Image (cartoon, rainbow, N blue to C red; front, side, top):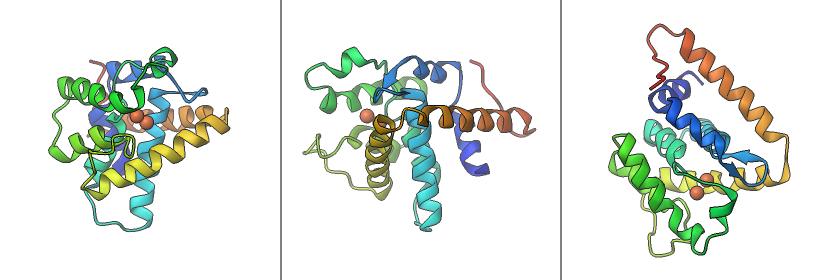
Length: 169
Ligand SMILES: [Fe+2]
Ligand SMILES: [Fe+2]
């Protein structure tokens, strides 16, 4: 998981951590959800030896729901279709994204965003794991605890690695 932790260190800061204030799928937060989606997508690509841009796979997945989210706005009309655009706008304000990462964020809700057909395999991997993880989170209330532990391990690794920075921005 060393590579995953390294890429997480590029994204993580105290603002990113604020995603932990927003509930998703009843039992999780945008923070634990995004971390778990990114981790599962990364593990899948490694396991299957998929020739893809692993760095962007992790970054796009970590940022796919990067916006102010709570259960109230999930009930808003058009939320499923509209939130990828909001996530992209906020992510672009705080991070330099390449076109692949932009596509991943903008198209991750396909087929709800039917006319934004994804072109890259990284986006398809994200779409797959976003749906699998969302279902798991709704069905397994304890999953978030497990993910929180995995995040702590990751942060501990970053904090103790001489060549990585733990941004507290
Ligand atoms: Fe989403
Ligand atoms: Fe998501």
